[in-house]
Image (cartoon, rainbow, N blue to C red):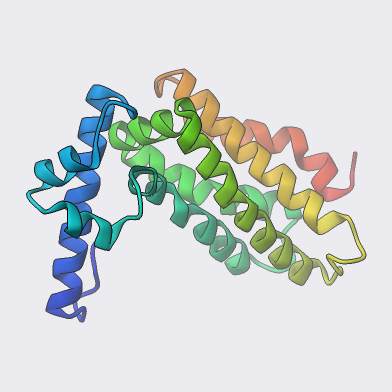
Length: 202
C-alpha cells in the first residue's frame, strides 16, 4: 500500500516500516513455516527491534492476516458503488471480484499469503473471525440496497453468507491449484451457480 502524496513524512515512514515487517515476515514464513518463525527473527530480518514490531502488530498472526483484512472493506465499498438496479448476483460478483483481481495481480505474493492463511490453523481461525465482521458489513449494505430489514428479512444475511462462501471457495481452489486456476474465472463460475438463489429465480 502506497500512502498518498499529501501523507506526512511520519506517515510515510510508518508505512515503510510496516511494509518491511510484512515482507520480512512473509519471506520467513513461506520458507520456514508459521510455527518455526519467531517475532525476534521477523524483527531482525526487517532491521527493527522487537519493541518496534509490537508497535505495528500484536502478533505474528496479525502480520499475515492484515494482508487480507482490507478485503472485507473493499468488498462492501465496491458493492456500495454498484448501480442500484443491478441484479444482486451481478453486483455481488463484481464486488467480490475486486479483491480477487488484486490477488491475481500480485499472484506470487498473494498466493503465498493465502496458502499460509488457509493451511495454518491459527491463521485460518483468525481469518474466519475477521469474516464475521465482513458478513455483518455486507448484510447491512445488501439490506440498504434492497430496502429490506436485516432484523426481519432473511435475505440480506443469506445473500452476504453466499457471497462470502463463494469468495472462500475461490481462494481455496486457487490455493490448492498453486495458482494454476484463474481466480477470476473461478469467481464467475461460483456466482453463476448461486445467481438463481441471489436473484430469486431459482
